[in-house]
Length: 101
Image (cartoon, rainbow, N blue to C red; front, side):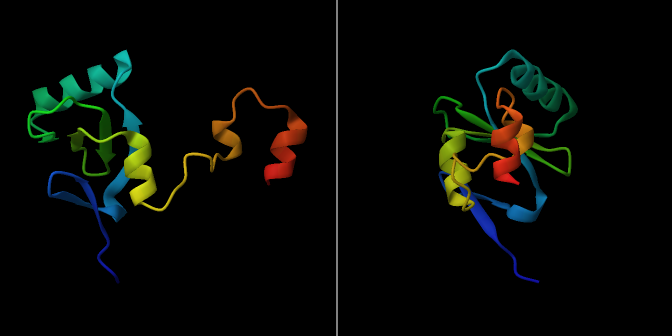
């Protein structure tokens, strides 16, 4: 088994197999998620004092805050921001969804 790590900013790395999601940090639900993780002692701050721009949620219930954009982290994982599956295309017509499958 290959141990693949992704740099989440400023020398901090995360095991790719543990990542559930990478989301921007600007919404209220994500801010609540961060506060809940802080209250539980499950927050990892990888910003080095810079503004928080994204949040990495891990399967270990840890929440990692990063100063890198979510798109940047996704690109480092090898995912382009344009690769959306049917679940992510909320306003698309059925024809478009069938074409993607």
